[in-house]
Length: 277
Image 1 (cartoon, rainbow, N blue to C red):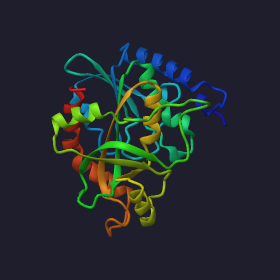
Image 2: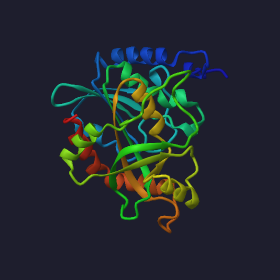
Image 3: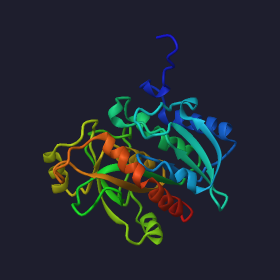
Protein backbone atom coordinates (compact mmCIF):
# COMPACT_ATOMS: atom_id res chain seq x y z
CA UNK A 1 0.00 0.00 0.00
CA UNK A 2 1.27 3.45 -0.86
CA UNK A 3 2.16 5.58 2.16
CA UNK A 4 2.52 2.67 4.58
CA UNK A 5 5.99 2.37 6.15
CA UNK A 6 7.09 -1.13 6.99
CA UNK A 7 8.21 -1.60 10.57
CA UNK A 8 11.70 -3.16 10.48
CA UNK A 9 10.78 -5.43 13.38
CA UNK A 10 8.31 -7.20 11.10
CA UNK A 11 11.23 -8.61 9.12
CA UNK A 12 12.08 -11.98 10.69
CA UNK A 13 15.70 -11.52 9.61
CA UNK A 14 16.08 -8.17 11.33
CA UNK A 15 18.21 -7.88 14.47
CA UNK A 16 15.76 -6.56 17.08
CA UNK A 17 18.56 -5.30 19.33
CA UNK A 18 20.15 -3.41 16.43
CA UNK A 19 16.79 -1.77 15.73
CA UNK A 20 16.62 -0.79 19.42
CA UNK A 21 20.11 0.72 19.25
CA UNK A 22 19.08 2.72 16.16
CA UNK A 23 15.94 3.88 18.00
CA UNK A 24 18.05 5.00 20.98
CA UNK A 25 20.33 6.99 18.68
CA UNK A 26 17.34 8.70 17.07
CA UNK A 27 15.87 9.38 20.50
CA UNK A 28 19.09 11.01 21.70
CA UNK A 29 19.05 13.34 18.70
CA UNK A 30 15.33 14.11 18.98
CA UNK A 31 15.45 14.87 22.72
CA UNK A 32 18.96 16.28 23.01
CA UNK A 33 19.58 13.88 25.90
CA UNK A 34 22.49 11.49 25.42
CA UNK A 35 21.56 9.08 28.19
CA UNK A 36 18.45 8.17 30.17
CA UNK A 37 19.21 6.50 33.51
CA UNK A 38 15.65 5.34 34.22
CA UNK A 39 12.72 4.28 32.06
CA UNK A 40 8.99 4.07 32.75
CA UNK A 41 6.28 2.41 30.70
CA UNK A 42 3.06 4.05 31.80
CA UNK A 43 -0.04 1.90 31.47
CA UNK A 44 -3.70 2.74 31.97
CA UNK A 45 -4.15 5.30 34.74
CA UNK A 46 -0.45 6.07 35.21
CA UNK A 47 0.18 8.85 32.66
CA UNK A 48 -0.13 11.68 35.21
CA UNK A 49 3.14 10.57 36.83
CA UNK A 50 5.13 11.95 33.92
CA UNK A 51 3.91 15.48 34.72
CA UNK A 52 4.93 15.17 38.37
CA UNK A 53 8.40 13.64 38.12
CA UNK A 54 10.27 16.72 37.01
CA UNK A 55 10.93 18.99 34.05
CA UNK A 56 9.94 17.74 30.62
CA UNK A 57 12.95 18.28 28.38
CA UNK A 58 11.41 16.95 25.18
CA UNK A 59 8.42 14.97 23.94
CA UNK A 60 8.48 13.07 20.66
CA UNK A 61 5.70 11.23 18.80
CA UNK A 62 6.72 7.60 19.11
CA UNK A 63 6.04 6.96 15.43
CA UNK A 64 8.97 9.27 14.58
CA UNK A 65 11.36 6.77 16.19
CA UNK A 66 12.23 3.56 14.35
CA UNK A 67 10.39 0.43 15.47
CA UNK A 68 7.62 2.17 17.42
CA UNK A 69 3.91 2.03 16.59
CA UNK A 70 1.02 4.31 17.41
CA UNK A 71 -0.83 2.99 20.48
CA UNK A 72 -3.96 1.02 19.73
CA UNK A 73 -5.53 1.51 23.16
CA UNK A 74 -7.40 4.49 24.60
CA UNK A 75 -5.49 5.77 27.63
CA UNK A 76 -1.99 5.50 26.15
CA UNK A 77 -0.49 8.78 25.01
CA UNK A 78 1.67 7.60 22.12
CA UNK A 79 4.77 9.67 22.88
CA UNK A 80 8.29 9.24 24.18
CA UNK A 81 9.13 11.88 26.76
CA UNK A 82 12.42 12.86 28.38
CA UNK A 83 12.02 14.14 31.94
CA UNK A 84 14.80 15.65 34.05
CA UNK A 85 14.40 14.51 37.65
CA UNK A 86 15.22 16.89 40.54
CA UNK A 87 18.61 15.18 41.02
CA UNK A 88 19.61 15.79 37.39
CA UNK A 89 19.06 12.28 36.08
CA UNK A 90 16.89 11.76 33.02
CA UNK A 91 13.90 9.44 32.83
CA UNK A 92 12.51 8.08 29.57
CA UNK A 93 8.72 7.95 29.71
CA UNK A 94 7.30 5.41 27.26
CA UNK A 95 3.68 6.22 26.52
CA UNK A 96 3.56 4.06 23.40
CA UNK A 97 3.12 0.48 24.55
CA UNK A 98 2.48 -2.23 21.98
CA UNK A 99 0.34 -4.98 23.46
CA UNK A 100 0.76 -8.61 22.54
CA UNK A 101 -2.90 -8.91 21.52
CA UNK A 102 -2.43 -6.34 18.75
CA UNK A 103 -0.88 -9.12 16.72
CA UNK A 104 2.35 -7.33 15.75
CA UNK A 105 4.57 -9.96 17.31
CA UNK A 106 6.59 -10.06 20.49
CA UNK A 107 9.50 -8.06 19.03
CA UNK A 108 7.34 -4.95 18.87
CA UNK A 109 6.06 -5.66 22.40
CA UNK A 110 9.64 -5.66 23.71
CA UNK A 111 10.91 -2.77 21.58
CA UNK A 112 10.23 0.00 24.11
CA UNK A 113 12.12 -1.84 26.83
CA UNK A 114 15.03 -2.67 24.53
CA UNK A 115 15.22 0.94 23.34
CA UNK A 116 15.30 2.11 26.96
CA UNK A 117 18.18 -0.25 27.69
CA UNK A 118 20.05 0.95 24.59
CA UNK A 119 19.45 4.53 25.77
CA UNK A 120 21.30 3.77 29.00
CA UNK A 121 18.52 2.89 31.43
CA UNK A 122 19.50 0.53 34.23
CA UNK A 123 16.09 0.47 35.90
CA UNK A 124 12.83 -0.31 34.08
CA UNK A 125 9.54 0.55 35.76
CA UNK A 126 6.54 -1.23 34.23
CA UNK A 127 3.03 -0.17 35.17
CA UNK A 128 -0.40 -1.35 34.11
CA UNK A 129 -4.09 -1.34 34.84
CA UNK A 130 -5.28 -4.83 35.76
CA UNK A 131 -7.91 -6.99 37.38
CA UNK A 132 -7.50 -7.97 41.02
CA UNK A 133 -8.11 -11.43 42.43
CA UNK A 134 -7.73 -10.57 46.13
CA UNK A 135 -11.32 -9.83 47.16
CA UNK A 136 -10.33 -7.06 49.59
CA UNK A 137 -8.73 -5.00 46.82
CA UNK A 138 -10.99 -2.19 45.70
CA UNK A 139 -10.68 -0.32 42.39
CA UNK A 140 -7.85 2.16 42.76
CA UNK A 141 -5.64 -0.16 44.83
CA UNK A 142 -1.96 -0.19 43.81
CA UNK A 143 -0.09 -3.47 44.08
CA UNK A 144 3.59 -4.11 43.62
CA UNK A 145 4.33 -7.04 41.31
CA UNK A 146 6.39 -9.66 43.12
CA UNK A 147 6.54 -12.22 40.30
CA UNK A 148 4.64 -13.21 37.18
CA UNK A 149 3.10 -16.14 35.35
CA UNK A 150 3.33 -15.84 31.58
CA UNK A 151 0.32 -17.47 29.89
CA UNK A 152 0.97 -16.04 26.42
CA UNK A 153 2.91 -19.16 25.35
CA UNK A 154 5.52 -16.78 23.92
CA UNK A 155 8.81 -15.14 24.88
CA UNK A 156 10.80 -12.10 23.72
CA UNK A 157 13.96 -14.22 23.84
CA UNK A 158 15.19 -15.71 20.58
CA UNK A 159 17.36 -18.74 20.01
CA UNK A 160 19.25 -20.50 22.76
CA UNK A 161 19.01 -17.54 25.15
CA UNK A 162 18.73 -18.73 28.74
CA UNK A 163 17.96 -15.98 31.24
CA UNK A 164 17.49 -16.45 35.00
CA UNK A 165 14.19 -14.88 36.11
CA UNK A 166 14.73 -15.30 39.85
CA UNK A 167 13.86 -12.01 41.58
CA UNK A 168 12.81 -10.62 38.19
CA UNK A 169 10.76 -7.90 39.93
CA UNK A 170 13.61 -6.76 42.12
CA UNK A 171 12.98 -7.05 45.86
CA UNK A 172 15.40 -4.14 46.31
CA UNK A 173 13.19 -1.86 44.24
CA UNK A 174 10.03 -3.05 45.97
CA UNK A 175 11.66 -2.11 49.27
CA UNK A 176 12.40 1.34 47.83
CA UNK A 177 8.73 1.72 46.84
CA UNK A 178 7.68 0.85 50.37
CA UNK A 179 9.79 3.69 51.75
CA UNK A 180 7.25 5.94 50.01
CA UNK A 181 4.16 3.91 50.95
CA UNK A 182 4.76 1.20 53.58
CA UNK A 183 1.21 -0.06 53.04
CA UNK A 184 1.74 -1.21 49.45
CA UNK A 185 0.54 -4.78 48.98
CA UNK A 186 2.08 -7.10 46.41
CA UNK A 187 1.04 -9.98 44.22
CA UNK A 188 1.85 -12.27 41.32
CA UNK A 189 0.83 -10.87 37.93
CA UNK A 190 -0.64 -13.25 35.36
CA UNK A 191 -0.37 -12.16 31.73
CA UNK A 192 -3.06 -13.58 29.46
CA UNK A 193 -2.97 -13.16 25.69
CA UNK A 194 -6.13 -11.00 25.43
CA UNK A 195 -7.77 -8.95 24.05
CA UNK A 196 -10.85 -10.58 25.58
CA UNK A 197 -11.18 -10.43 29.33
CA UNK A 198 -10.63 -13.62 31.25
CA UNK A 199 -13.54 -15.91 32.07
CA UNK A 200 -14.39 -16.55 35.72
CA UNK A 201 -12.98 -20.07 35.30
CA UNK A 202 -9.71 -18.69 33.93
CA UNK A 203 -9.48 -16.29 36.86
CA UNK A 204 -9.98 -19.21 39.25
CA UNK A 205 -7.23 -21.08 37.39
CA UNK A 206 -4.92 -18.08 37.79
CA UNK A 207 -5.73 -18.01 41.50
CA UNK A 208 -5.12 -21.75 41.85
CA UNK A 209 -1.65 -21.50 40.31
CA UNK A 210 -0.63 -18.60 42.52
CA UNK A 211 -1.82 -15.47 40.71
CA UNK A 212 -3.27 -12.34 42.30
CA UNK A 213 -3.46 -9.90 39.37
CA UNK A 214 -4.61 -10.58 35.79
CA UNK A 215 -3.81 -8.47 32.74
CA UNK A 216 -2.57 -8.37 29.16
CA UNK A 217 0.88 -6.75 29.37
CA UNK A 218 4.09 -6.46 31.42
CA UNK A 219 5.40 -10.05 31.70
CA UNK A 220 6.95 -10.20 28.23
CA UNK A 221 8.42 -6.70 28.69
CA UNK A 222 9.91 -7.69 32.05
CA UNK A 223 11.64 -10.70 30.51
CA UNK A 224 13.16 -8.48 27.81
CA UNK A 225 14.30 -6.00 30.47
CA UNK A 226 16.04 -8.75 32.43
CA UNK A 227 17.75 -9.98 29.26
CA UNK A 228 18.99 -6.41 28.72
CA UNK A 229 20.47 -6.32 32.22
CA UNK A 230 17.97 -3.93 33.82
CA UNK A 231 16.40 -4.11 37.27
CA UNK A 232 12.62 -4.20 37.05
CA UNK A 233 9.96 -2.61 39.24
CA UNK A 234 6.36 -3.50 38.44
CA UNK A 235 3.20 -1.82 39.71
CA UNK A 236 -0.42 -2.63 38.92
CA UNK A 237 -3.38 -0.33 39.38
CA UNK A 238 -6.32 -2.56 40.23
CA UNK A 239 -9.01 -1.01 38.04
CA UNK A 240 -11.60 -3.70 38.78
CA UNK A 241 -12.00 -7.05 40.48
CA UNK A 242 -11.40 -9.85 37.99
CA UNK A 243 -14.24 -11.79 36.39
CA UNK A 244 -16.12 -13.90 38.92
CA UNK A 245 -14.49 -12.22 41.93
CA UNK A 246 -17.16 -9.54 41.60
CA UNK A 247 -20.62 -9.89 40.04
CA UNK A 248 -20.10 -6.73 37.98
CA UNK A 249 -19.50 -7.15 34.22
CA UNK A 250 -16.13 -6.01 32.87
CA UNK A 251 -15.58 -3.19 30.38
CA UNK A 252 -12.71 -1.10 29.08
CA UNK A 253 -14.71 2.01 29.99
CA UNK A 254 -14.57 0.86 33.62
CA UNK A 255 -10.78 0.52 33.35
CA UNK A 256 -10.45 4.04 31.93
CA UNK A 257 -12.78 5.52 34.56
CA UNK A 258 -10.91 3.87 37.44
CA UNK A 259 -7.62 5.13 36.01
CA UNK A 260 -8.90 8.69 35.77
CA UNK A 261 -10.19 8.62 39.32
CA UNK A 262 -6.87 7.34 40.68
CA UNK A 263 -4.44 9.14 38.37
CA UNK A 264 -3.52 12.09 40.59
CA UNK A 265 -2.90 9.88 43.63
CA UNK A 266 -0.95 7.14 41.85
CA UNK A 267 0.90 9.69 39.74
CA UNK A 268 2.19 11.33 42.91
CA UNK A 269 3.09 7.91 44.32
CA UNK A 270 5.12 6.96 41.26
CA UNK A 271 6.81 10.36 41.05
CA UNK A 272 7.89 10.04 44.69
CA UNK A 273 9.20 6.54 44.06
CA UNK A 274 11.10 7.70 40.95
CA UNK A 275 13.37 10.09 42.83
CA UNK A 276 14.38 7.30 45.23
CA UNK A 277 15.32 4.74 42.59
